[in-house]
Image 1 (cartoon, rainbow, N blue to C red):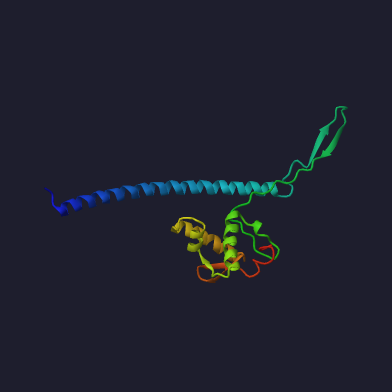
Image 2 (cartoon, rainbow, N blue to C red):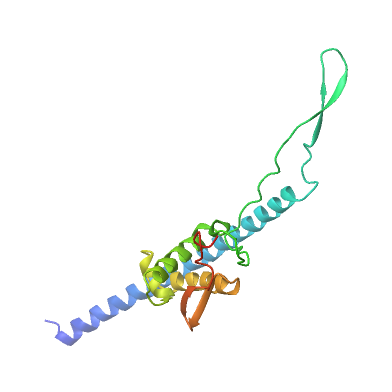
Length: 182
């Protein structure tokens, strides 16, 4: 009959092997994730470039079209084609100025502003990124918290948010004015 210490050592060894196997699997998944993120970034850049080309003046080649009439005479029929809307990139945050609506931001940024506007309206203290992550129903893990921190820091840099204390965010003065920032 094996000793208790021997059984514990066997279980410990099995657990260690399981942990090592899971770490190897996690490393493989992390590598696949990095490759997928790189591909996503390349497609995002391509979409930005196409949007910039299509929205540039003179980028619309359908301004005037020659139409042929059944009688053989040709006339120029002007076709009013609105310029295509440039694709909105998530990370583009305009600098805040009086009259700029929150809708100028992507949905993720609007969500951050709405959460902080509610805090200001209720007279509550500024939020940390961990608190915002939990309030949004996301897992409070470093990756999610840091992604939210990046967004908040970008909003601070563009004048939408203020950071009265390190790591604590609130609306910048004037952003929560009449019309909720517009």
